[in-house]
Amino acid sequence: MFYLGLFFVANLLFCVAYVVRDMAWLRAITILAASLTLPYFFAQSEPLYSAMGWQVAFIVINTVNLTVLLLERRPIRMTEAEQQLHISTFRTLTPREMLRVLKPAQWAEAQPGDRLIEHGVRLGQLMLIHQGRAEVRKHGVFRANVGPGDFIGEMSFATGNPTSADVVATEPVQYLVWQREDLERLYLKHPNLKNAMQNILGIDMAHKLSRHGDPVAETG
Ligand SMILES: Nc1ncnc2c1ncn2[C@@H]1O[C@@H]2COP(=O)(O)O[C@H]2[C@H]1O
Image 1 (cartoon, rainbow, N blue to C red):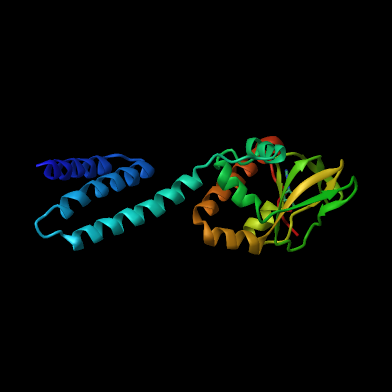
Image 2: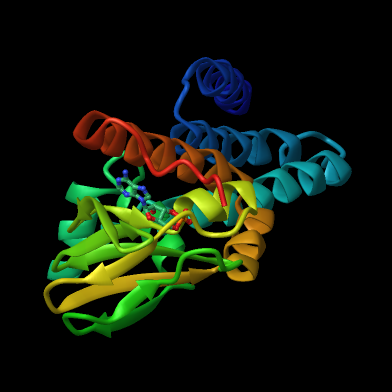
């Protein structure tokens, strides 16, 4: 009777597990429910070893996946620069997703007068200004200022066309650089990050449009 009661509770718990929406709870309750079935199967006049074996397999699979889930949910520590980047540019990503995006990027620095981007070249890079300001110039004519939180090179990065303007540092600039191949590798591994980054680049372009009216049109 006791074992039958346990088996009943186990099945009730399976029902609860299938109702909860959070994957970690679903797996935790399933592990508990599967464990509670074991005494019942064992207490039969002929212990049901094969049924027990399957329940143990479910327990192992759910324990592994639950561990992975909980590891992914651990709070993470961000440096000051990462915190600023999260606020300025990557707020639509979780901190963990942002760190995945930042991992293949290289930090770089430029001094006033340095050209971050040359007009008319195929860049294959995406850059993000973290600190400092730069000017967008076309044929030497000022078109716009860019500063912390602004991507540069995103237009040619998105279209594959040559760059539409020069971008020249007017202050010491600290920026991040992604190589196209590195981002493509990242997107293959985490396809959701591709959409997320396209969204972020879309927001960046919208900000530039609202500030300056028209990103430089490439007419050659
Ligand atoms: N009007 C603008 N406002 C801000 N940034 C711009 C503007 N026009 C061009 N840029 C930037 O200058 C970069 C030159 O290279 P890209 O065309 O790849 O991407 C361009 C943008 O990042």
